[in-house]
Length: 373
Image (cartoon, rainbow, N blue to C red; front, side, top):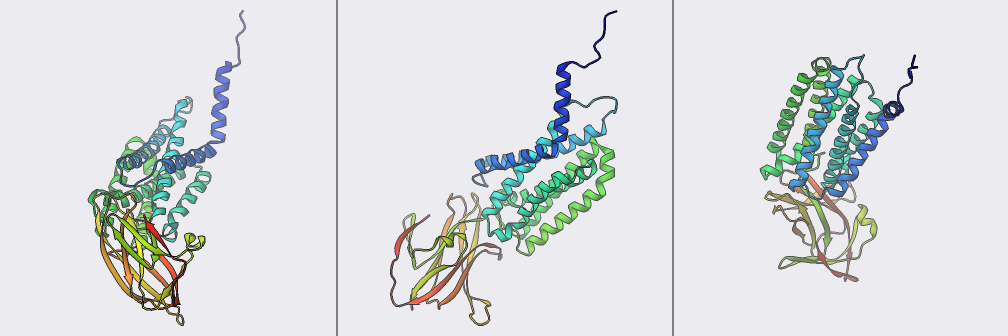
């Protein structure tokens, strides 16, 4: 008799070992895939309103949703006696790569809009994603977590996508964004119910409850002015002794400032009594979007330490310029002390803030002419 080889072929053994290693380090590979998405987006995301950016965001959402559905479909049709196809392992990696790309893009664009204090929920969400990748190991828990996370991504994307196509911003546009996100998620749930009805029935109550909480939280953030006013973003701003426009260029008389000003420390401005100060801002807005912004000049009372509005200047802006739409406001004879100028949308949403301290002087020294971008 010819002896039979009871051992599997060497190639099959290597495939089995590779599969075992993948399952052992699956969570780490998913995290690395997500970080790779961050790196890709930091290189390629430049403007929020260009077709490439919109197409990439849409592709990320579609791929993430499809991978979640396909993972559930394979689990529902799994046969214990039959090994699953080897290429199935690509779905969790693609899902995490797509979600990583989405959140890196959100961090890029939300981080450019308003202040970091307004953008902290997205940083917290990123941390939750990385932790959840390790913690939510069970199948049903991962489905619930991934589905809620997907809705958060859909809503976050719709918040700045809808204004780009409607060329306007405001409360109605935000509510329309929420409705659009809900509509997209309903399509996802229908696909999930069709491909994996058992998993859908077992998890739908928790998924809907989680999505409802996310929807309520984002609405609360909006109406409490916590969310940045995307798609607007402050490109540059500063306080100067005067600002002049020469054709298409702006110049200003400026004072040297410490490097700490770039980190948020108040600027020091020496002002001759009776002379005005100017606050300049350049605000990016998508192509064809027209709205208005407000410079709200506020002075802090040295006794009560409360901020009091001294003047409000509103002017229109038009989107499309890479460096942002430029404009400035003037405050005559500002008193010595602490000042700030809030740069807001027409409905009071904070785009940026300039802080500075005015020191009275008899004559200016060390000023220079600066070209404003």
